[in-house]
Each structure stands twice: as structure tokens, then as C-alpha cells.
Length: 301
Image 1 (spheres, rainbow, N blue to C red):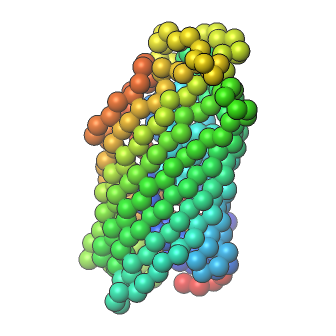
Image 2 (tube, rainbow, N blue to C red):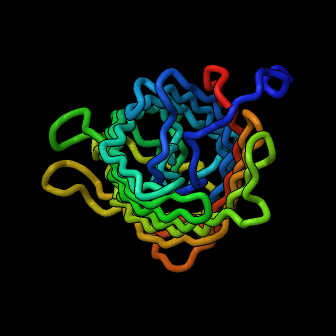
């Protein structure tokens, strides 16, 4: 209620729900966001805070966590939010910004982040993995106008190792996206009227296989997809490559963004267009997200 009754402001650092985008907050501006995400029967809640350091630098902190107990693919869920229960600090640098006309521009943004585990998701093939911290690097470029948007981007999530050769390791992941946005003419209103935009987002991902330290006792896991594939013997490095991990996938679907005064409501669904998961893993036919944001823009409309 405090957020809804605060000073009317306008948010300029928001984009699509799942894919990469280039927009960032202005210097001294900030936003708070709460996102609920669903995949493979597991619900995650993700709070996020962003602050505009300068005109072209933005710092964000996110910490999504599981609301229920379950196993799911471990790739990054969205461009701006980790796919696992992790605390992540993400720095955005908009290194290219070129006005091409009235209300139109081309721009590109680079993202660099670090994350650390906050929860250990269960696995059906043994105890949870002891995951080391990871780093994330991504880039997005696109064209923005009052009526149309086009963004393309890609990001790589790399998990470190506690020791050389041995120890648990989460599979690295690559996420790509292509986003088309449209603001209908009859909804193209000036502030303080509601501003509504529709997107069609497509994401493609590749998740590497995880491995487990062979010295860790393997017992029955507590996932929900029944018996797992028998584990192979350790390799020469003393680790067991987990057959029920990793895979590829392409997801596509509609999303929307509605901004009214200082509040932004966002949501959408991506449906599986193609994909393959290694071994025995929970199927993921679609993934969904809904989020609410509030912007603090120093009183600017």
C-alpha cells in the first residue's frame, strides 16, 4: 500500500519477462521487484533490487528461492534472474547508445555478475550437489522505438570448482534470446495513462552435464521423477558424470508489460518448441512468470 500511494513516477529500466534487453535505470534511480516463476512443478520467488549508478551503469541484486520442494532443470530461468536458488549481484553497462530519430534509438548493454548458492535443490540420483559460486556474462543489443522493439542477446553461466579435478560441479549453461515488442497505437498514451506493451519472446538454452565427487556416498535422492539412470563409474579425475543432467531446449511464447505511474506489472508464458534432456529428468512443457515492480525515479515523471 505504501508503494501504491507514493509519489507518481515513471519507470524506464524495464523490458521483456524472459529475454535480454538493453534498458537500464538512470543515475540515482532505483527499483524493487518481486517475481514468481514456475517450471516443472517447482515454484520460485525472486526479489530483485536495482540502482542506477550512472547514466550507463546499473547494479542489481537478486536472490530467488524455492517455495516448494522439487527437482527441475538447472539452467538460467531468465536473462535477469538465476535459475537456481542463488544470490546474485549483476552489473550492467550500456556501452552503446545512439539516437536514430524522434523516440527511436539503437543501443547495446553488457552484463557481468557473480552468484553464490542459498539453497541446495534435491536430486533424484543422490544427495544435493555442493555447488561452488559462479559467474555470469551476457550481452544484448537492439532497436527501440515508441511502437516497436527488437532485442537479441546471449549469456553464459559458469560455475567454479571447490578444488581441481574433484568435487561437485553444476553444469554450465548458455542462454540466448530473441524478443519482438509491440505497443499498439490505441495504447500509446502519454503519462500518467497506462502504458501497455506486448512481446513475443524466444529463448534457446544449452545446459552442460553436472558431476559428483566419487568420494561422496550416493543414496536415494528425494526428487519427484522416480528412478534415475544408474550412475556410471568414476572417470580418471575421480568424478562421476551425472547422466540425468544437462540438455538443450527452445521455448517461445507471448508476454506483456503494463506500466502505470510508478508500478510495472509483467508476466507471460513460454512453451517448449523443441528440446532434449539427458537421462531421466522432469519434462518441462512450459515455463511461466509474473512480476510486480516499483520505481523510485527521484520524482521525475
